[in-house]
Length: 128
Image (tube, rainbow, N blue to C red; front, side, top):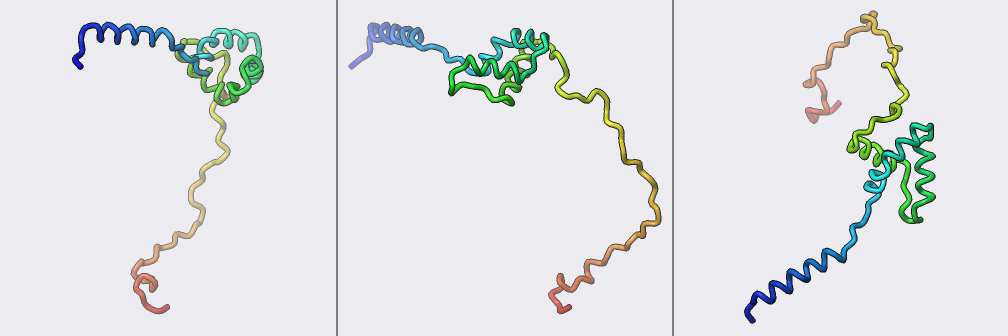
């Protein structure tokens, strides 16, 4: 059977109908990216990420709920993509920690000469 122009028209029509039927599924990362400005506003109002995640989980279906670490990752990624500055630093440390260890010069530590590896009987297969 030879292909003719009618087959090409039918195939094009079938492909157009196929793309119109398919819905794009919304991933969790896209869901958070769509809400990043609202999340940022709530954080500026004083709510923590834990509280925001808990409220979002109440609105999501049972199998689609977010875990806290995953939520933080999605927020961090969406924030960088949207160009939104964080409301506060992720860590509490503002300056480097003071060093508690002070270095002192060697105080009478005896320097032990390294053994000659040839003197080890185990390597030579001999008796001890």
